[in-house]
Amino acid sequence: EEYSLGQHISMSAHKARKVINQIRGRSYEETLMILELMPYRACYPILKLVYSAAANASYNLGSNKANLVVSKAEVNEGTTVKKFKPRARGRIYSIKRPTCHITIVV
Image 1 (cartoon, rainbow, N blue to C red):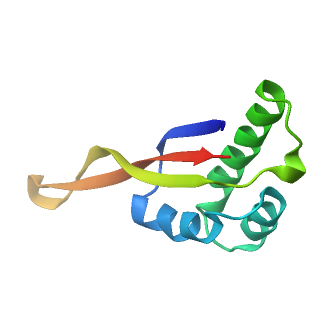
Image 2: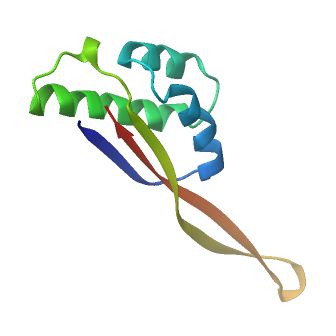
């Protein structure tokens, strides 16, 4: 098993899980087709992680990419980036940017 880990990806874990649930347990080539055709913003960073995990497996283990299967894929919540936006009459409005950590195991 080889894995790739993406940390502090700027999107909510809920949106990333929507895509991750579609690729868990599928073959490498099928995963690439699904991610390229899905219309979600979360697909691009997940596609990069799948490429990276496959490259790790072929380099470290010497396995063929056609035989790879996404055995485990999980999304965890990361830290929330908090910023403040000034508003009228001296008030502030807090902006919360959620992040997530994605792990892909092939």
